[in-house]
Image 1 (tube, rainbow over the protein chains, first blue to last red):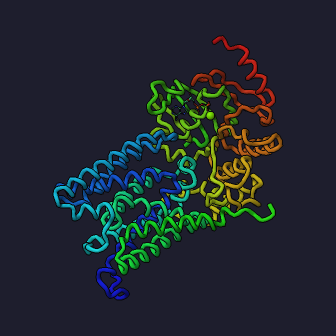
Image 2: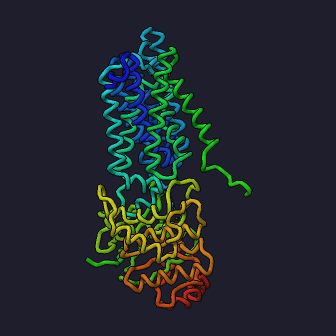
Image 3: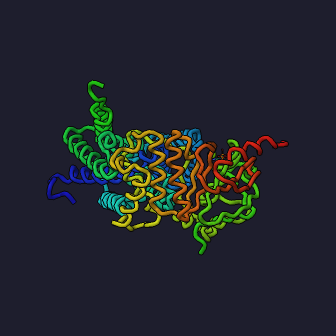
Length: 275
Length: 246
Ligand SMILES: Nc1ncnc2c1ncn2[C@@H]1O[C@H](COP(=O)(O)OP(=O)(O)O)[C@@H](O)[C@H]1O
Ligand SMILES: [Mg+2]
């Protein structure tokens, strides 16, 4: 899609993939972090990781099994998180460990069998050998995520403010919530091959966390999180490929560094002089 | 339709995972414009009662009809007509919401999916803020206000939707004595205008100068249902606790 800007085909596809993956994940990430359910996002990304490794091992589409696995996790965790008190800490811990174990079991086994070409991409991501369809699918889910936020802006704003108050106001919270979980499942599963299962949640959490340090409106969060995520990811893909560095980890480190700087210079944390 | 009425017939409500219902076989009817004060010890089921009335908790037995709607079947519909000022709230001081944002949210449920607030909605939000005396705070961050100011914002949020019934869960616990009587006057005003008010309260020192209905709860059941003037409530409740033969 961006061939007119970037003549090198490999770099162009990598930049496109990183751009769309980061937009989808960061837009949904704003909702996740603001609702304080990032642990659910975290567990879902690892479920996608486990699902994909099982799928690849059995020779079926890794993306489809990834979506399936993260949807199953969403179906387990969604209802639990609806309770006013959320005693899910232990459950999340157990599920997370289980997902990680399944993923690593199959990845290690595939490495042992010598069929580990795709498996290492699952761990660390791979921006070089992408299918065109993957990029189109990522562009599609980014578009859907943005559309979702635009159409349900007022409901999402109220739910982010306080889910119980939103529900008491007569807002239909549940359909929005399950649509959100569904889109997370698709977004993380499609992003998995590019970013890698070990780092995926960085895209879900960190851009939104950086934006939160500066934004005083919900609108600002939804505009700046994808802007930050997109520009850092594009720069990471570009720079990494030019210098033969692993793109996913490089970009993740850049995000984390940016977050630290953001916390340090955040106007929200400034103490007035003379106080 | 019967705006502003509450009718509970043998209602029990249980939380998921607990064996016993928290409120058990409660029956009473409230007419439009009544001012109801719900009292009783901690854990008696007062909050559970309010959330049963507005359909946020599942009813396991009996039937609740609120504003003419069956609560179990049309909870969302009930909640667009019933305001509910929750008891425990804690807002992040950095949260990206102004007082104005929060008050207009009160109208989002009525608007439904896909419709944006218009001039009329903003006018009602402003009216509610003026009534509570918080119009000066409209652009302030809600997380940085005092507990009492936040309480007023939540009341304004609920009044913005012009509810037929207003439920309040211990609204006075964050308020000083002066503000209590200020808020109580507002509640009296809206009850006189025909909006049913159901308020859970431990503080009986700032009750309205009009007839109120007292519902006292104990162990998930009603232990008293009486009418009296606001300034007699404290005495009634004291007599009640003196006569417990448990
Ligand atoms: N989410 C919940 N899950 C299970 N039990 C609950 C929950 N919330 C309240 N309870 C129980 O229900 C009873 C009544 O609680 P509540 O209605 O909050 O009382 P009150 O508001 O009168 O203090 C208490 O025994 C409390 O432990
Ligand atoms: Mg209570």
